[in-house]
Image (cartoon, rainbow, N blue to C red; front, side, top):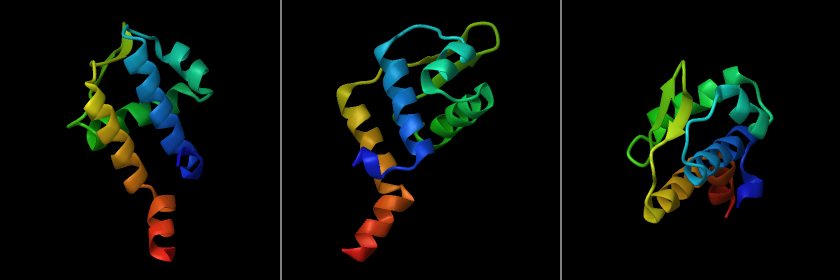
Length: 98
């Protein structure tokens, strides 16, 4: 299913997985390098995640410390996957076709 997602959705999923796996503060530059994106794109993704997935996850942001995700329970990460996939244009298109 991940292969069907657009670049932004894949990057956001990787960001969530990365931050929840490595529970510490990360500078924006470090994370942007891991994601192969700009810090501006990273900030946009963090804001998107905090707005759209707030019931499952929150990413703290500090100008001094960087960013860090709150720990997730395994069922919440599954909810995030489901939410991202179901809300993707690609998945909605496939549902319309079939």
